[in-house]
Amino acid sequence: MSEINASHFNHVAIYVSDLRRSAEWYKEHLGMTERSASGNHIFLKLSSGEVLALFQADEPKQVGVGVHHLAFNLSELDEERALETLRKKGIPLERRGPSLSFQDPDGYWLHFS
Image 1 (tube, one colour):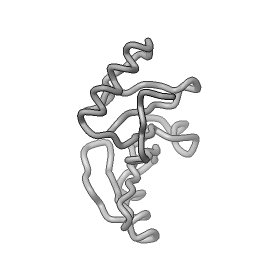
Image 2 (tube, rainbow, N blue to C red; image 1 turned 60 degrees about the vertical axis):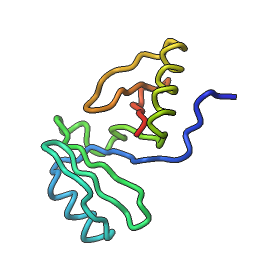
Image 3 (cartoon, rainbow, N blue to C red; image 1 turned 180 degrees about the vertical axis):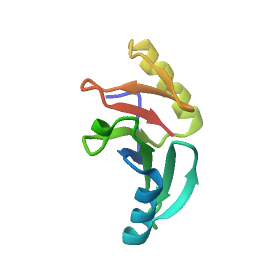
């Protein structure tokens, strides 16, 4: 049994070719609302609370080929314990934006929120 128990997704992030155009599309066609924005990403929220993070692609080959990262909800205390557990298991952590992130066996980036 795992020492870490992620309860549900916090958000899924994808690369887009035009950040503002994509945000407006999701708002118009899926009724999402803008939760926050910065220079290279916009977080959109569904009415049920789930979040889609749009990240501006640096290269055209990033768009439409996969996810930027997956984020799982943990309390702040549980997050610190989980990160320590990952360190003890030899899983490298890397600062990516405000979060310490890690990769699964196939290279997908994960972090806790």
